[in-house]
Structure formats: C-alpha cells, structure tokens
Length: 100
Image 1 (cartoon, rainbow, N blue to C red):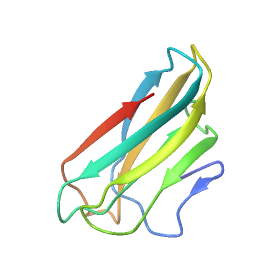
Image 2: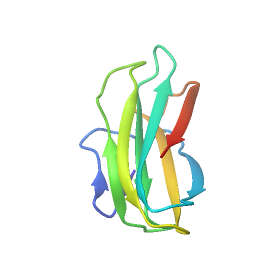
Image 3: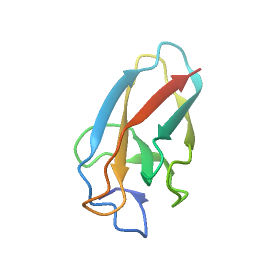
Image 4: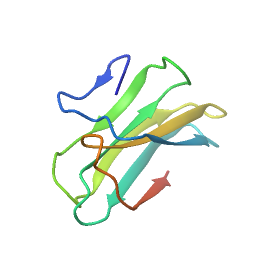
C-alpha cells in the first residue's frame, strides 16, 4: 500500500486496519504500535481519507518490535492511523496507543 508521500520500499500488502482520532488540542501526538511477536507491522498517520497525504510512517522491518511516529496536530482535525503487515500473509495482533 502507499499513500501520497507515505510509501514503504517493502511489500506491505496485508489488509489494512484504520483508526481515526480527532486532536482535542494542538501540538505533538505520539502514536505507538505494539505488534505481537512474529508480526512485522508498519504504522502511518494520514491527514485525511482516500488518497490522503501521509504525515508520518514507521517501518523498522522487524517482527514484534514497537513502531512509533509523532505528528504535529491541529485542534479539531481528524487524523487516520493505518496499521499494515508485511506481505499478504503477514497478520497478527497488536495494540495502538495515542498520547499527547
């Protein structure tokens, strides 16, 4: 998968899981993705839906390792967190957290 300005050189073709959050105040927001062991995941934050612009991407290419991105948000704006796996067969459990 790729979004405008948010592509990985790796084959992230597993089904995406997308979450939305609306910034309550302006400033930096940290998004952490904690994939379970054996799951190589990536996380990106988009500034809209559809062919949205990418604000951040984390892809360390390791299984079961935390991915972290930071975005500077505008109060009242909705952002989209996209979790994806490496290759079509790469799937697993994960936890996502957002802090400000």
